[in-house]
Each structure stands twice: as C-alpha cells, then as structure tokens.
Length: 189
Ligand code: GLN
Image 1 (cartoon, rainbow, N blue to C red):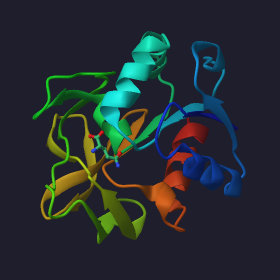
Image 2 (image 1 turned 180 degrees about the vertical axis):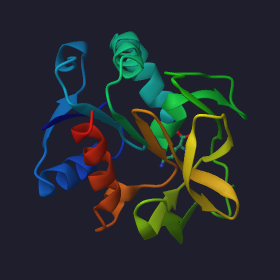
Image 3 (image 1 turned 45 degrees about the vertical axis):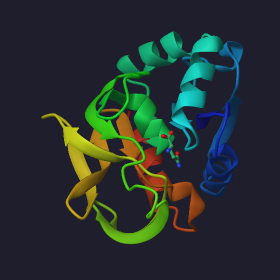
C-alpha cells in the first residue's frame, strides 16, 4: 500500500513513521510530479494551513489533489489538513481544497489553551488519548458527514465518504488506531 504524505510543511515525518510501523509505504509529496492517481491514499499533515495552502497552489498541486479526492481517493487530514479540506472556515476567508462539507473554526481553543490533551471516545475505535496543538474544531457538519469524536460538544473528528479528518494529531501519540482506521478505509476502497 502506497500513501502519499504531503511534505510541504509541518508534522509529516511523524505520519511516515506511523505508516511504516503499520506496514504501509509512504511517498513524500513536495512537487506536482510526486503526486499521482496511482497512490492508494494521501495524508495532509498538521502545521500551518495558510503556508500549506499557499505552497499547494504555487506547486500546482491544489487542482490535481482536489480532483483525485472528488474522484474517491482516500484522504486523511490532521489539524491544518482538516482546515485545507473544509468547504468553509468560520473565522477566515480562505478556502483551500473545499471538498468536505464542514465549517471549521481555526485556532478555536484560544491562546490560553494553545495545546492540550484530552481523552475522547472515537466511534469504532473506543477511548483515545488525543493531542491538540493550536487546534481547530468543526463548528458545523452537513448531513452526510459523520461525527466520529467530540470534545465538550464540539466535533473534532469527522468522516465523509473517502475523507477522514481530525482536529488533533494522532501521529504524535504512540496509539496507532486512527491510522489503522484510515488504512482500513484505503483497503476497503
Ligand atoms: N493553527 C494551525 C492553522 O490554522 C493548525 C495547527 C496544527 O496543524 N497543529 O493552520
């Protein structure tokens, strides 16, 4: 199984390590020629969505990625990756890929709570220790989007068909179950 990991900026190496522990191969995507429809799935890591979005555009990756996702390619976005997938942001005018029917609030937990850990209940996985870093949350999910986990009534993990997204960073904990969940989506395609 070959998973493309967007390596423009942010926490991509941690995803690659996780994939390798689970027996999946990762391919770093930095430029257009690294991306192909033949990949089994892609990961959009955490980091800074404005920087990542700008680089996706500059490298000519935005349109091919958007097309592949709409064509059914499995995608997993974490934190900034969730922001890139959202069809709208409630506190920012930018829209990047816009393929997922969710409205997301950036830096939603404010300065006081820049980073925190929370035990949540992830549908189909169970109790899960989640790490949040200047995290967004999902303010609104349209019909057709499944909310998989919440923290204090706010959705922090969602799935819509071939798209999985979390406001937290599953690549930063030792628990591999969310990546396993994604790889099962890839297998089931
Ligand atoms: N605050 C970042 C943003 O808006 C996301 C943070 C993260 O990916 N850890 O892009």
